Length: 110
Length: 110
Image 1 (cartoon, rainbow over the protein chains, first blue to last red):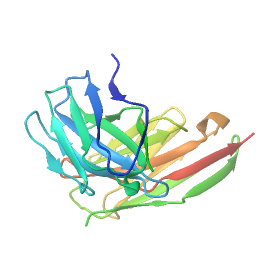
Image 2 (tube, rainbow over the protein chains, first blue to last red; image 1 turned 45 degrees about the vertical axis):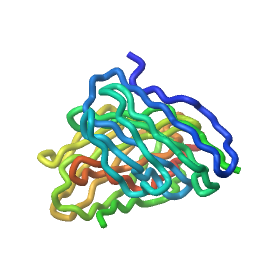
Image 3 (cartoon, one colour; image 1 turned 135 degrees about the vertical axis):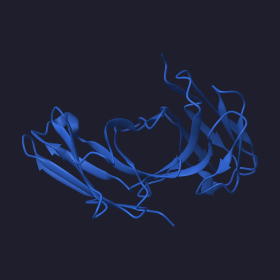
Image 4 (tube, rainbow over the protein chains, first blue to last red; image 1 turned 180 degrees about the vertical axis):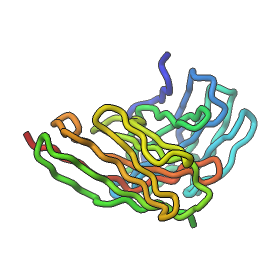
């Protein structure tokens, strides 16, 4: 079992470029989440998906879109990257209670 | 909105001493309280959790206590070791999401 996997591990974008962060889980979990982590601010929820076919906004959704492609995969898209989106992005999936995190994507927008 | 406060933000202890990290939450409906350990460059790892029908839970050198009346929960690490050095996050449920504290950087000196 790989658990939660994320690609890429690192990415540098120029302002205005777009990109998609990929996430997959092999634990057959219904719920999946995207967070961003900034220094001193903990983990903030961007979007989540309670089940295949549904998505909902979290605390900081502006500038992002998501797609729950199937039960395994949940992608996060930046349509027009801004320097304020420089952060570390984590995907997570949830079983009955526990959330399990991926290794993260470190994104820099210049 | 709902929030989780975590203290202290940094904690330095001598190897072998105990460490205590405290959190308070605002939503009286919260019923699940996990603790995560995050090492440099990695994703958060679930180390222990507690549900609202339990007051204390232990797993070897770590324990979590919950006071639902006061809306407090704490992480206790005994006999600390250098490998316990990391950032620790508490969290509490809010509907089907987790709200995270801002983290505690624990340093254990040999």
